[in-house]
Length: 185
Image (cartoon, rainbow, N blue to C red; front, side, top):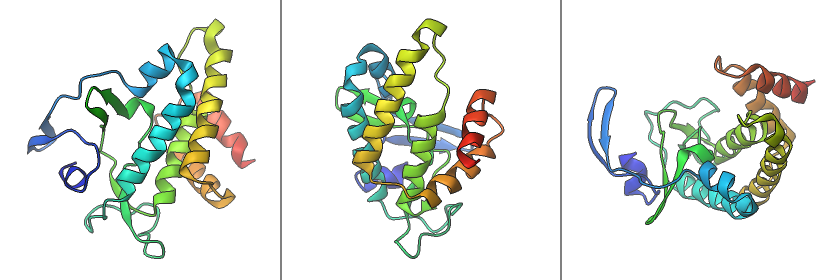
């Protein structure tokens, strides 16, 4: 987080780190998901903001000691990857957006991070009451399309690679796992 902040990424300031504990500036405000729930008509603007945040993170040079789960990105230039940059990990503060939850930071090609966000926002199950599910899925689909338009196209190879990677997550909900498996069949 310190490295990202030093290079201009919108990240809360870190004051102290001791083992697994971190003390950082409070990022006060709603998450991007909170805003989407209250104002679903802003999905396009929020998706474009998320794409710009990706650009800011990917402008940060990679640290050699970070893992490289998608290859080292040598052919395209290794950059800092968040690997979990989605609307729940963006706090919309009065001073601007702040990216949180950096425990999965890695290095590699920027397209891997964009693909990971695509698979999370497109296939994650949003817990809403049954009557709200169709409207929620429509906003989710609109957000996903707008994000991909703004962040850049994903070729089929990256889509399938990230779906396979995501299927290894033991915390997937059954419905999400089923949707991801359909993508590969």
